[in-house]
Image (cartoon, rainbow, N blue to C red; front, side, top):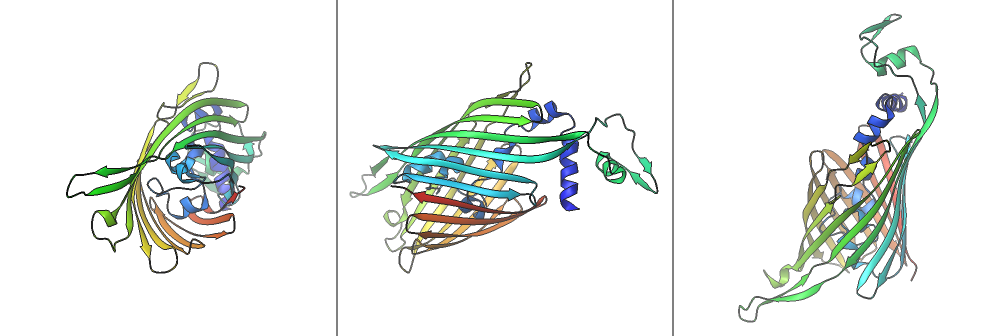
Amino acid sequence: MMKRSILIALVCLTLALPSYAAKYAGEFLEIGIGGRGVAMGGAMTAHTEDPLSFYWNPAGMAYVSGLHASGMYADLWNGLANYSVVGLTMPLTGAVLGAHWVRLGVPDIQRHPDYDNLQFPIVVGQDTAHDVQEYLLLRHAAPQGMFTDNESAVFLTFAKQNAFTLDLGWSYFSVPIELPVGANVKIINQKLGNTGGSGIGADFGFQLRVPTSELIYEPWKAKLAYGLNWQDATRTAVDWGENNKDAIPYNLRHGFALIQKMPGRDSKVTLSWDVEKRWEVTHHLGVEYNYAKVIALRGGLWGKEWTAGAGLALWRVNVDYAYLSRELGTTHRVSLSLRLK
């Protein structure tokens, strides 16, 4: 019943396909990518450093060493939609390049006529419908056909690491600084029924990492990090044809992270916080415990919704899992990264 209600709600939103497409252009890119990032509540801007960093902050890809193939798959909203990512990351001399494809597919959506002229409430048998969704449920309205929603984006990423020593001149006091920068060019394609649109946009990001052992007290072996990702900096324009264009508003996403070494072999704890505002202000909190660079346990808060997950790194393979419970249904996400060279 839950799945059917979700489907009918989607039908109601898509009765007028062009207006829906314009209003929600690029919305599929707000879902979140990768098991690690989602499990940490999306609080990734300051410390992300794996092949899927192109989504959270393209600057983080500067830390990737070696050729990597990566991907993710998720059934969303109790199987109503599928969400997938696949791509390659390749370091070059002094820089890192990446190409990734992101896709959201919603199959078998019912097509119904326009019910805008109905006057509610409407009595249906012994029940009363107060809106279109209730009317469809009570009438068991048969669809006039089926259509699909296919939305995809190709991300082309460039990242470069910048490391230097900041000499403050206080009794030979100097601080090593890491300042990676990165950028995305993304090509968006969306098709909703017979309506299609496409556009090109850009993201820009940087991170700033400073070891606290140089600032506070040497046994406190931690790093402080700040990150900023300016998404859709060019106000990505999606062209639906017939002079119907929609500009995706930019999003300034930034945050802080504390990466603290722990007792044990290569163990650490990461605490992170992000904030963003595209449609509304959303806060993200995340925590991760990583033991011996092999096993990771994670948790987070994405707005008001809890997240959790785990990761496993063996040989050249990293596998990450995330659990996220939302109003439309629980989602499980699994992402994988394989070092090819």
